[in-house]
Image 1 (spheres, rainbow, N blue to C red):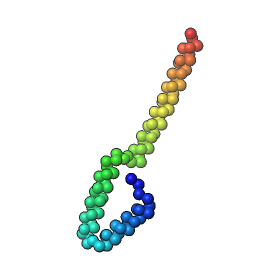
Image 2: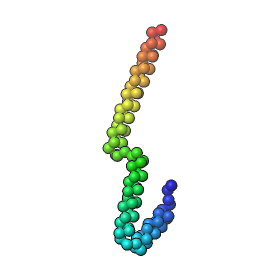
Image 3: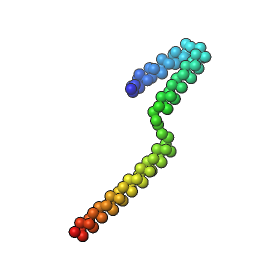
Image 4: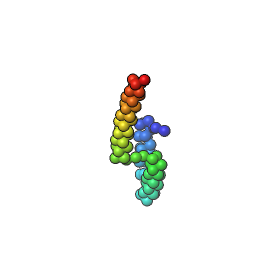
Length: 85
């Protein structure tokens, strides 16, 4: 679910208004709860870091190159076999 920017701005404005009405201790506890909930949701997303992504991308490129080389070799072998018969 993606909220339009206008609704996000309205939500932020509402949150600021609520914060002003609450004692600091309640705000601190709410912030801890929200932070924990967000971190938990992010953890469940199976996200990878930039370094891991780059490494996997590098390995994928290397595998593609090997596959292309093997395909060319197989095509040459097949052509040589056809030429012999």
